[in-house]
Figure 1: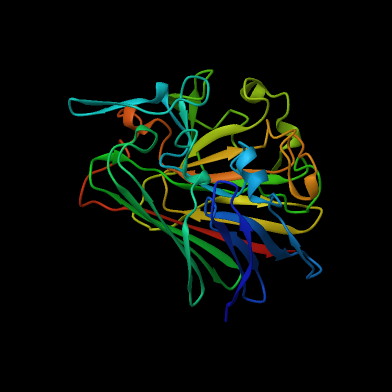
Figure 2: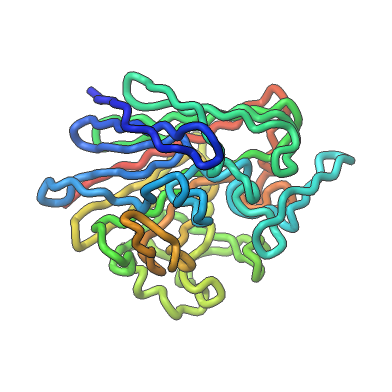
Length: 342
């Protein structure tokens, strides 16, 4: 049984209110806010059965609106980068909002992380919905999005449906920053991944080629600490890990990406997804962002696991698909976050 209750809303400095809901099934508890579809807090038990919050967040709508780290939000209409903010559909050329190193990152300056979603409840979670109008940040088509957060045992499900009345690239991802021992660093965390390929990038984060992980520092068939990655050649340009792993194309709806774990708390998070890529970001540029209790967050304080379509997919036909959703088609994303302790 999932108990759901409304919390006191926040004032949106732009007008209106930000709704807040707490859902708890006795194992996992999650606070969701209507701003950005944000997961503000996520409590899971450690090896002693003690629950603690394991995601970074803020204490007010103002703080969320003043940060650019996408803390806990849904990134979109297109997560990650689109080169030079440009793509074409047939003869039609589109120019998107450019907001990072000459590219469109996470949908632009006013991406889905800054929208106030409609928030309702489900028997086992919450449902958020959003309408992104034609031309929003340059993206074509009226885009309708449905986002469900559901609790099942020790699992958090994130399920997203989206459609557009004009052909548009769509790729959405949950952008929580995980720290599994609630400390001020995640460098002691370990990552194990089944992925055997990753994307090489240019100096602005645009994919240039598919590479095998074998023989590189991105190969992590066994749990590997983030501390051990610092200074490795593959991570120097990005000041730490900020790379997109590719998953094999299989018929299964969900496939395992890997496991993030903390030897300190005993908590682990295993991610399953139907998306073709997972961006792993070690919070390399998080320092100075204001978090809860007005405390500035630190570099490497958390880890993001971002299931998604291929970065710059509309311009990368040789790598994997285009991520273009035509009228009548449905974009479908499902990810399962399984929490355990030992």
